[in-house]
Image (cartoon, rainbow, N blue to C red; front, side, top):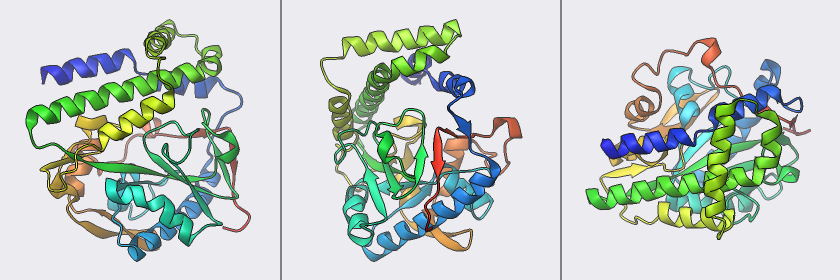
Amino acid sequence: MRIMSFINKVRGLFETNVMFRQIIANNKDLHFITEEQTAELQKVLLQMMKDIHFVCEKHSLTYFLGGGSCLGAVRNKGFIPWDDDIDIIMPREDYDKIPALLDDEFPDKYFSKEIRIDEKYDVNSMKIRLKGSVCRELFESDPKNAGIFIDVYPLENVYDNSIVRKLHGYTCELLLLICSCVRLKNNAPHIRPFITDKKQLAVIERKLRLAKLLSFFSLRKWLLITEKLMSSCKNKNSSFVSIPSGRKHYFGEMQPRKTFEKAVLADFEDTEFYIMQGFESYLTGLYGEDYMTPPPENSRELHAVTELKFPENK
């Protein structure tokens, strides 16, 4: 607990979420997705998810709706009304297979963004993007290829030995922080003009100093090192699993394996998608015990984009 408290304090020193919200509020080139656009986007995402479900069923791949998508399935039997994205989780072995299989089944419809297949991509998770569409966020690594997307996160095995598990987890946390700092260094010229708060400026400078010390490797190199470490445990029967690249990182996303032991179908709009059998444990870990209670309107997460364009043939 003391080490986790220390990690959380260190993470707080480098936290930039508030800063990015300030950038969005001050950037005239960004706009929040409207209710009308959200409704249209949900229709497109639903069809994308049906295609992914088809590929997974055909090739015996496992997936689970994750984050707000899982919550929406449980609480709303579909999208959370204001939600404008879909997240899925896949065991590492299936996560590695999905890009090629999706390309085989839908070569003219989708393309995947993942660090091992795209040198420009800059995060340790995957985006499955829709060709002929645009959903361009502020810091796109490849702005010319920024279609509407579904996020895919790898579910990793976790070491049973408690000492090895802690060492693995702390190293993953450190590497993800390093990647965040180096990524910020690359985007710093676009960020600084929109930050006026002294505390946030201090966070930027703190991360840039760390990035400068670590500049002996490129961001891509750091990402590949992180990816290799996150997936290093090969024990498919380990007691715990985790989603290190998730919003709560290694320890915050760690669950007993039985949480993800079985995929179960759940109603989602006009169809069914898979969620984990232990969704109560998973959702409680992410959102707290009152996850079935919708948050107040001023606390709902909204997304901003620089450009949103729907495909002509959905």
